[in-house]
Length: 229
Image (cartoon, rainbow, N blue to C red; front, side):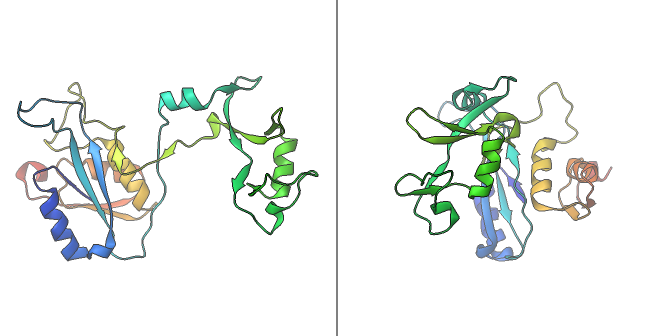
């Protein structure tokens, strides 16, 4: 992972292609680092940095990481409430496409809707039904409950809007210091407990501190006297 601003992102991408091979390029991540700022009246406001994600080969570790659900999305989607107060949304129990196996056959004496199949195996449907997770509408269409409390959030994509730079009230030890939240996401996505994390422009050592807290081994390097101190 290489974090850059608009001045160098395109040049370093070419270097990374040469070192790691373009086939090992995974993502260009856009990090909205701050809210709108007017640097000049003759151009757009610069509010993002770029993170280039490469791997050494096709064989690499990657674990899903999740962002919190947007409150507006929660309000729109989780419109139902159980007697115990838990919020849930209703999702179709059918999925498009015809299947020849169990999911394409009858369940509780009913076939899937035309051109569809059951989203789950009939044994799973029985357990969901017995647990009160399946709802049948007045016109006979089945849905199932998806509780907000069971959601991990939304899988992180290539645009990160949920992490801003450190607020002015917090002390920054280094000019380009990144929020621990971003480093947390990167380290958890691309390493396992006990793996080795290296930061060759480690600055004040935020990456190393996060790696230590997450149970990773680490190496930090820098040429700056301030960083070495």
